Length: 153
Figure 1: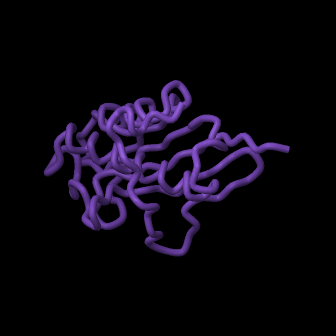
Figure 2: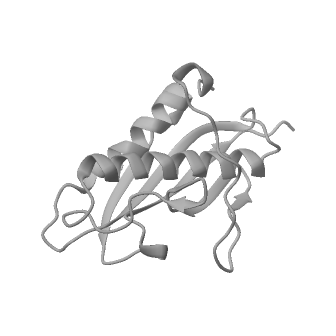
Figure 3: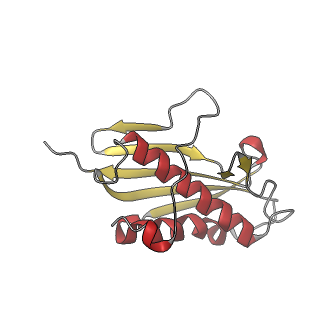
């Protein structure tokens, strides 16, 4: 299930929160990971809007980075291990785009493909790709996810 190093991925440090919220909330067998914007070495990756300054491939890369950060936050929340994580259940990808942009699913594939590469079948999930007018910090994407946990009794 945990193939990060096998596919050449490394988790970044858990992301810092940008406002008044928790990065992850656990409730029973569920973990809800707050939205992540794509940061790399302290810099926003591909700022702007799809359909304007940001290409579909750059948007997909940004979505993948956001998903990687979400995994980092999730792992930190459950004890710095992937063991309690049964699977990723739901992913929501918000895409900052121009009104005429229609390729939201292709952008969201960056997050979905990364999660499947990193976690195998346990990374496959249901998904929504939603177009929005703007996102925090001028980000082109934001990714939130829900994971199912398995806790020993």
